[in-house]
Image (cartoon, rainbow, N blue to C red; front, side, top):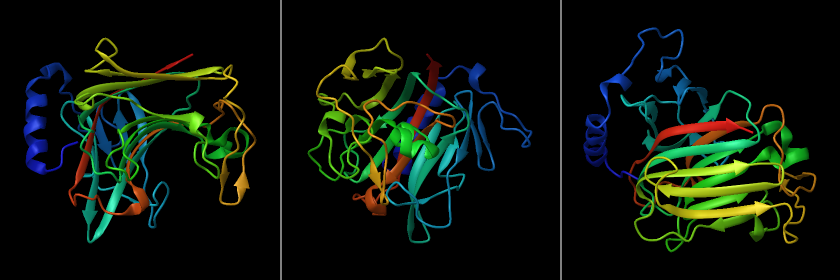
Length: 283
């Protein structure tokens, strides 16, 4: 992750020069989201429509204040999404994008850029599915990839999970800390999960796309006798017991960049994540 503006500018210039001019397409009409870019709190990224999450008071996760400022969540000339954690008027803000189309079983793939091995131990980049309306039946239909150290400087930062994991009792069989090597999460990396009724599988690769060196894989299967139904407990409510959550109407894909407990980054610096691409292939 790029920790200062000059480092980000230098990296952005390198990426800009490497992109063919055919990708530099902009629209001047603000009524509709351009091929890449932002109009108000609507964002067009990776061929999909997203909305910036914001509100006047702290929201989950964290809780955090979530920024709608254009300098905190934007697309650059290559069409890459930038999501910042930044301070404004003495308050630190997180960022989140909410996908506007319904998703379900299928293949979810993100390409990201940055140094995620040296992130502050209280920042989180989340790439996940969510459904606000399916808490009771499917524990919010949540499948996760998270780049975070969860408050421990010695924790390896790539985590893959199927919820619920830590809502009430802790269910360790539903999450894994990736056993990555030094340097694996620096630069461009690709992260994917495939969600089906019976199995969720995760893989991560060096570089852009699934043809690079494999750096992590794990699967969670309904057929494993250790993977028993679990209940999500939150705000005094309990979900039905589930093994693998199912998608329902209004399940969407989300990306967020946030702070544990809303506490400022432990290095005191603006944090910036770059999402180069996202694809979803339904099954």
